[in-house]
Image 1 (cartoon, rainbow, N blue to C red):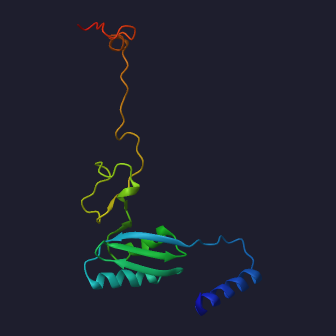
Image 2 (cartoon, rainbow, N blue to C red):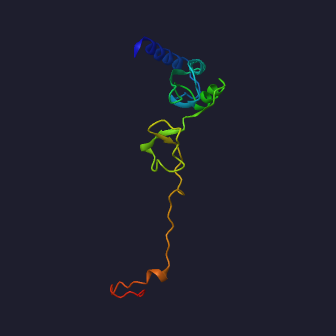
Image 3 (cartoon, rainbow, N blue to C red):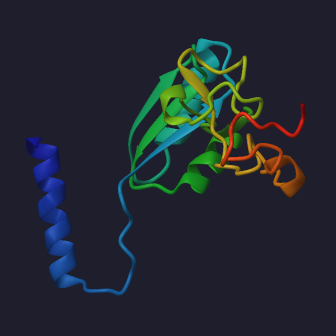
Length: 154
């Protein structure tokens, strides 16, 4: 846990025991963003801006995938707003591993710009691949179950 973690734990305990408030406790989150970065300068600018947010524990950047992972006691919308304030195009990470999607090569999910092994995140839409059932008694009664050799078509 280390000295720093121990000191944070003790200070949180002292703060909660001496100062009881109805303030909602923030939860530990991992926020993944897709941020357009071209060079080391862009990467450094984004990392510095996101690290300045209160509650951020770590910022990891993968420039090849254009992916930024922020972990800490932060909210996704605040991280996204801070990333956009750098002047870079940013959005919540839109991709999921292709094995988590029922139909990864459907038109809605397949994306040529996605990193290898990923497809675009789509909501489960029941209209994709639905089959309507056709029932018409005239076609159902053409063949007789009593006499399979008797065919009304012939």
